[in-house]
Image: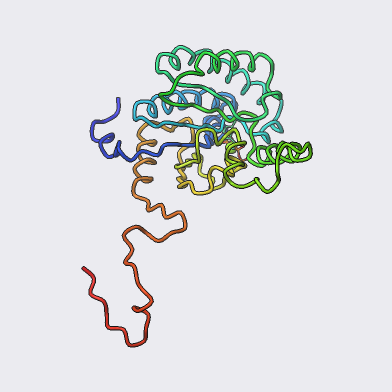
Amino acid sequence: MVAGNVVPLVDLTRLPAHVAIIMDGNGRWAQDRGMPRPIGHREGSESVRRTVRACRRLGVRALTLYAFSEQNWHRPPFEVEALMELLREFLLSEREELIANQIRLRMVGRRDRLPARVREVLDRIEGETADFHEMTLTLALSYGGREEIADAARALAMQAAKGELDPHRIDESLIDAVLPSMEVGAVDLLIRTGGEQRISNFLLWGAAYAELYFSDRLWPDWTEVDLYGAIESFQTRDRRFGRVSSDAQVATMDDLAPDAAPRAHA
Ligand code: IPE
Ligand code: IPE
Ligand code: MG
């Protein structure tokens, strides 16, 4: 159980609407214990459960989890196989809880590269949860941010070549509309566990103005308390989006004149 003094520090009225997590450090967690890497991935599934539950309880609207990158296919076949099997088991074991909590499940990434047995379960649960609105859980599987943008560019170019799209209409909002990862909006808070401070080809477009939070915690050790800490940190940030801070003192050109009298600020 979470200590009672931890949750209240999160301001439930100012939650990040979209939290995205690069769940890193499973392999090192296992290696530190002299165990094979897949044991770390298995333990990592428990952190996924804890995190999904905690986000749902808090009222986070969208959670996107980086579970398998397009580049992760280059790992040893034994590890890839273990990850795919764990993914299937995770989906089967979470099905009821997702439905009970009205959580919509979806995936982004190259679906056709996933083994058929994973696709089947995914298709089924996506279908069963498609109308839920409490929270959207997006699993990034065989996902790469650059690949997603390249796919969108190709699709738009094909429409333009067929005369169905005027290239002048291509702007940021059209790209928002065609990127699957943007269906739940841009990322507000991007968390990476495992100590590395890099994006590793995650949501490149949607994370343009995300607040970044890096934790040394290895993913299997990540708990809801760590999540609350990340959200608390998010809530202390001043998100300026290129503007000046909302409480900045606004100067006028007169203030800049050489003989301007010092301004009295209230
Ligand atoms: C993250 O943990 C899980 C996946 C990438 C699938 P890693 O397996 O990358 O763990 P480390 O970084 O090697 O410790
Ligand atoms: C990013 O972790 C991918 C996932 C968490 C699924 P990696 O472990 O693959 O990233 P790098 O190799 O350290 O950049
Ligand atoms: Mg890693």
